[in-house]
Image 1 (cartoon, helix red, strand yellow):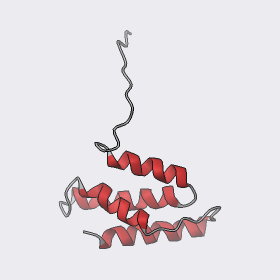
Image 2: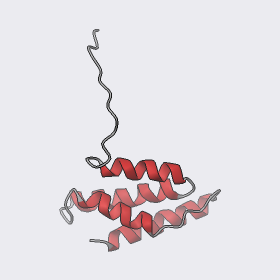
Image 3: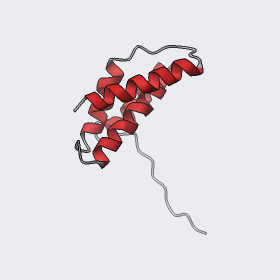
Length: 94
């Protein structure tokens, strides 16, 4: 029943580059968060299948994000198209 002490620190974006990418996607908005999620899912799957190293996950996501032009106010079809594009693009990067 006793929680103890909680300490909160400023995020270390150098130590956690994926966190920096998530903040960037959130600030950008539009389809960028969906694109980040799709690219991340593919990169994590490649890592789990031992095709890439752990540190390559944010590198792949960042590369896909840099090639994405976010759409604002997309409909579901557009979000699905972006999701597929990001998954394919992430799968091409090694």
